Length: 240
Image (cartoon, rainbow, N blue to C red; front, side, top):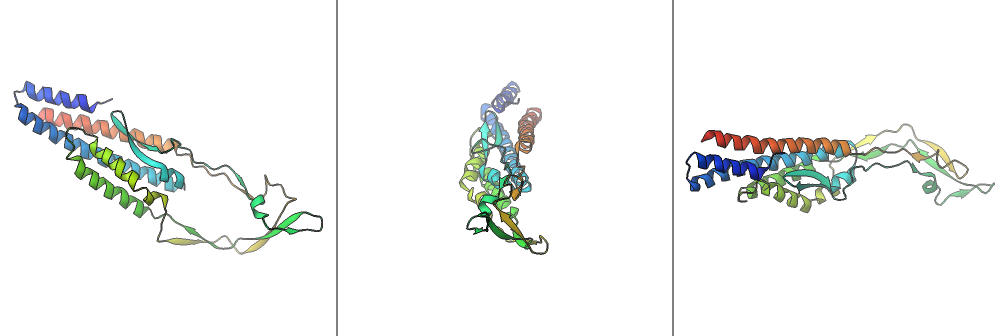
């Protein structure tokens, strides 16, 4: 694992060994810190964006609403507020819900005639609004990160705090667009208390396990952060 503190100390020792004045060393190290800080902010913002996109593909709105970038030792990870990464839904029996306010048959059973196949509107999440929020937060974090001293994670920490404050963008899925999803010609079916609630009128399970997607995103983020630290420090070591 690449440690930012150790790498910056290595840069300082290298510059001192070359006879560079301490005042100049501080300037050089600050330049390196600012460059690394900016790269990390961009990488964290990109990772959040990728996680949001993965959540939208899986229709995992709860996952998106819980997303947060957080510092983990000498790196950053994208996590969730609850620590959950699996937001899957089990099969959901609809029959008890459908038989609210039912009619009573001659044999005493409950029933209700349900219209099916009626065209319905399905809202599409406007990812543009979410991504705009991420990008605006990233720009602000980069500006504030350059005033951070020698902490290469200050910009990303700022991004994390600002992103948490703007979670309304991901909790309320506002959209400008909708599509008509045709479910065929309207027909009618009868829901009855005589039917098996475990096999009839059951909403299928929904797979919203984001564990692998989030693991892949965090692995890429870790590699990017470590690569940024190593490459920037190497550049300044070799430049003087």
